[in-house]
Length: 119
Image (cartoon, rainbow, N blue to C red; front, side, top):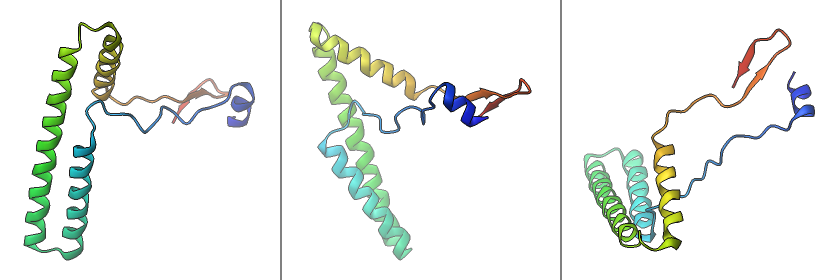
């Protein structure tokens, strides 16, 4: 059934999994990298001290992410009147809407019996 469907129409693997985040910057990347390192250290050593270090790095990463989002939102608000930046703003708004949507089944093929097979 899949071979027949592929002969008629090619299948894709779905949407791109590597989405660009509108607020990501170098500071956020560094904070998240440190958080991941501390998590690995905590799981490897399994001590209370390592857990507290991970907890502190996680809190710091959340603060850095919040400040990066706020900074980017202020930049966008200042650039809203610029026609070149309006496309960027609408692209970011669409991405925010997509992030909040529920995941639905995308690949449905109707079989010979007439029933849909969704994966």
